[in-house]
Amino acid sequence: MGTSKARPVSTRHIGPYGSTTPRTEHRRARSDGKPALQALGMVSFDDETETYRMRAFNDGCFLETEVRLLDSGNGIAWGFTLGEIRTSSVLRIDEPGQWTELGELTMGSQAPIRFMELTVSRR
Image (cartoon, rainbow, N blue to C red; front, top):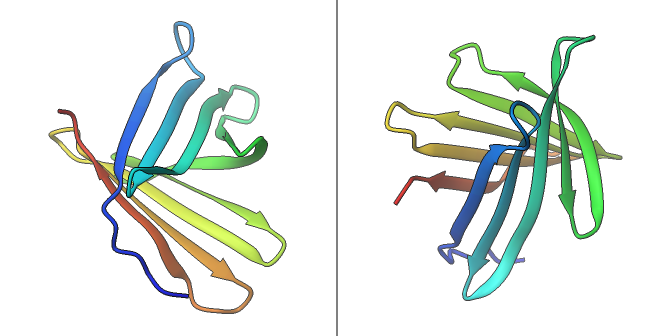
């Protein structure tokens, strides 16, 4: 399997649903003019457990996971597990508001593979 160096164009619509949480994020990335990723994620805060939760939708399916705030206060981390496949993602926001997201995929006992590195900034 070869690697592709196509430069995707990503659009994100991020904002509250109602007056507070949950937060929503919709992504649509395009590579070579065709949709490469379409996903919708909702993050909410559970008052009882004092944790953030994410429900992510893609291709008619969804996954749920806990979202952790980074100690630095400038981002979040989350991951999903399906059998022996695990993902790990970290999203950081810098002072000017630029978002950088890094995603890694691990299969079984193999070393993690970077499957996504994305930087988003306002136009």
